[in-house]
Image 1: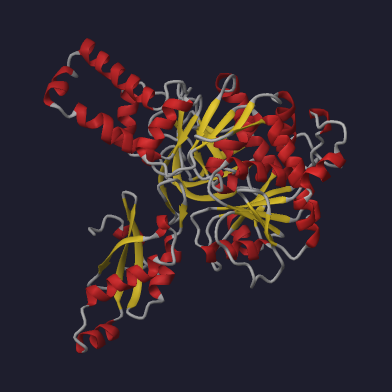
Image 2: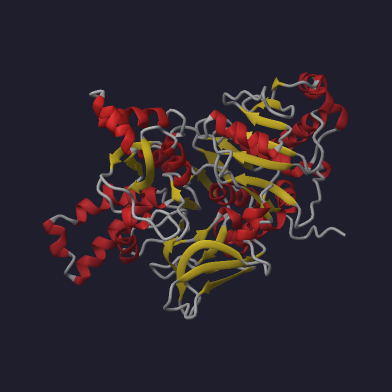
Length: 553
């Protein structure tokens, strides 16, 4: 018998019925869809999915920039009972093609360039902008798209109302979506997220702050929806709460973000550290460095007034109406965080992973301890694999409703990450105080974070570098938001280059350009540094990466 209680789809159905006339989705500066409009679009896309031969459990992919239609397509997929496969829009065509092939998606929603002629299975492509088929081998799909309004009218001959909505009843442990951690063939891991994990993350938001942010609630969606952080907290939670989502469809420069914040006035705001740090370093910190201000900060009464004024200005920059800013996705600068704490800014830092859809730890900004990443969220257990968790660093482990089912078609990696007792081994290192607050002390995984929270796996870039004829080995490091390649050249190749009178540095620049041409923007190298000796290695001959994180480039 199915366990349908802890199922996110039921939250969507209830919300659409309860918020029928309210605005749901807006492309910032464009048209708005009400919840009833979204419901009608969902039913029409269900007709298209049927005509495309999609059955419950089949995979349907999405490869596009954030927009209202992305959300409509996503909700159409899961309410139909199919498995959604979100693909980061910044992935190269080859990377997206790898994911479509690996997931065996029957349908792809996209408005981006992609050729799937060489796929082992036939894939129907539906334009994200218009929901019209771009390429398909199915005449049924073409006919359904051409006659969609008539087919919809036949299905609901009187009038389509909220009473006509009866979405798929999924089991709590049933697969809802596969979220790929990267786009390469060899190291791509498809995280299998069950409905219970979506439900548990969203139910947490509803229980924790739903009453505060939902009434007349708005959110400005900036993070990629194909990433679990943005999906869970800029879309899934808001739809369940009946909020109004605005999609920033343009490149999110600081000027555009602040204008949109002023217009939208979000009641809820999630951010990666980079956005907060840029604002603080550009708007706030320079003013505090002035001698006159520094002197006044030593006077208690005046100091408080200055800090209050700074806090108010920062809150106004983000619309002035939000309950709190939740920061996550990467390590947060300690100096910026300390200043936020000193001025009483309503922020908190959470901790999560794609494998937990994504939340592991959180604390409300009023209870949050600076330097921590909160406590275990409801329905999750967190422990430190250490003889003395408060003082001796150990790996952070967690288990509970938020945890994935495993990696798609990758039993070996699943067994490495999920133990027999159900504990997810995060690969992150930390300690935990007596109150259960977790403090991350390092990341044993090598994953880096892009400026919008994109996962970057340096080994994949290094594999490509090492495949270049003139490179023997390499390490990719991150400085601020930029990536750099440290390379040790192949010594035999150097001799040949020098014999031919060629310049090694020029050749490395050619390597960098060739590499970048095949990588999404957030994975591209800003420079290459030539090392004069081999990298230091462990007894297992693995490079001691940590020795090179502070290398000058």
